[in-house]
Image 1 (cartoon, rainbow, N blue to C red):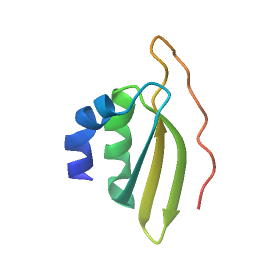
Image 2 (spheres, rainbow, N blue to C red; image 1 turned 45 degrees about the horizontal axis):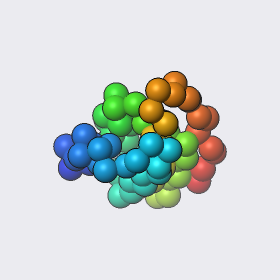
Image 3 (cartoon, rainbow, N blue to C red; image 1 turned 135 degrees about the horizontal axis):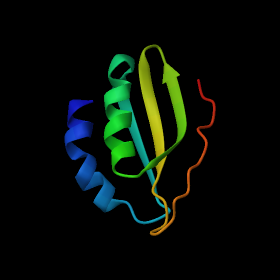
Image 4 (cartoon, rainbow, N blue to C red; image 1 turned 60 degrees about the vertical axis):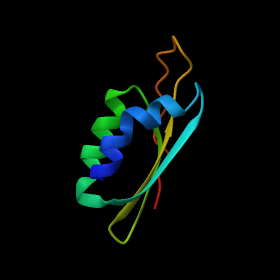
Length: 76
């Protein structure tokens, strides 16, 4: 999780508008920190999956000028 948080600005710049970013290998008790970092950049969480204490998060980058908020799909 700490490296995903550190890389958040770079990963955000690497994803094009309406693109998808998949983050995995997140320990469940650090998930909130990762979510906060990526939501602060304007990415929308569209899917979450958990398995045995590990979390996968799928993000969508809204099109520029869009205030689109997508619901999180139920997972794991």
